[in-house]
Amino acid sequence: MQGIMALLRRLVWTLAAAAMTMPGMLPESDLPREKPYTSVFSATSSNSGEPFYDLVTTFYDDPHSSRAFAWEAMPEYRNMVIQYGTGESEYAYQLRAKAELYPVADAKNTEAAVDESVYNAEYITPERDMLFYRVAVKNLEPGTKYIYRIGDTEKNVWSGFYEFTTEPEKTDSFSVIAVSDPQGRTAAEYKNYTNTLNAAKNDRQDAAFIINMGDFTDNANYDDWWRYFFDASAGTKESLPLMTAIGNHENRGSGTKYYNLHFYNPQNGAGLGRWYKSAPDEDKALPIIQNLDNTVYSFDYGNAHFAVINTGTDWEPRSMEQLLKMQRLWLESDLARTTKRWKILLTHIGVYVQKPRENIVREVLGSTIDKYGVDLVLEGHDHTYMRTYQMKNEKRVSERLTGLWSGEGTVYSIIGSAALKRYHSKEEHPYVAVLKNIPSKTPSYTLLDFTSKQLTFTEKLIDGTVIDEFTIDKLE
Image (cartoon, rainbow, N blue to C red; front, side):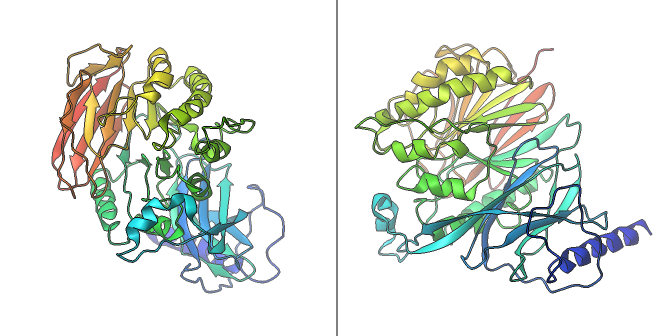
């Protein structure tokens, strides 16, 4: 009987949401959370949502009570809203989304031209305008499942219905999926990313959110390559928050701008680059700095604090030193304020790296990581799997490979690639505890399992092979 009643309540909500599309029922202003629409049993049809692309959800403020959404639409859809409700109530709510009209280009994606498209980031001519929407929903209830959809109220065109669940009021333990560098160019290439996510979700069906460490496409200036990336996680990205660290392939040309249009991240790092004037040799850094706000942020979940930084481009590393210095004060302040038991840092270009390059990230931020006792740094970029010993002051503080103790030092891990491309390294560095040269075309993923007393890190291939695993324990 209870199942029938729940089904009826959901049907009522669906009918109510559909009824809100009727002419004359939608006010021009945003509706606050406290003023719901009541049920009206008069439904209109919901279309497939084909005019709307790249819908993705992220954390915005407190994961217990808020959620953010971003998507892209054809320019004729200028009156878009989000409608949401619990499914257990006869009420649904509506918020108008903010839009930015911005030009985009598609890649020359024939087999002969694809390489040219990869390297042509500085000289792309936009072909058409698209609308990029974003909206933050607040005043939600903790531990509650919500149903939502997006649509144009004037044209009465709607997406399908999706679900998301807010963080429970008390979260003693939770799991996270982490991946890196899908970096595709064609829809076929992104099938590997889909397979990786599916394998990881099968492993952790109760995962709270997904982390992606950057390089989402091979060239972030192309709208269709973003489309392939988002399509590869359809059915996941609309429900599980996708928290991201921007990669070097996004920090080329106008790629940083497109990253910001696609993701609505927490805004607690806003303002870092607002008044900066570049030096003559920082021409490639300036577009990144001018669009820095949404790429640097932090968020909490359960007993863990996650901070995200922007490591810029690898084209002119020294020109990016100022970018990192701008973030150092923010990172110090952010880490000093948190009272969470676990501290995690996300950075695309690593602090400890495998490929030969100047360790600029370590030079600028290494002492800050040490000072505030970061437990784990997740890194991307090098398309291999590596983790360090616990490090402090650039020295090994422990010879143990597992059973580590929090507070002794920081573990840094390059978490491989969620797609095809792999780099191999035979370099021997004193900080390397584990190095795995994984064969090409072999995606991998990372699982993080948090409790109040232990963090378990597991690296797996998509066939289920565990290639590394360790724990970090908390002292009382």
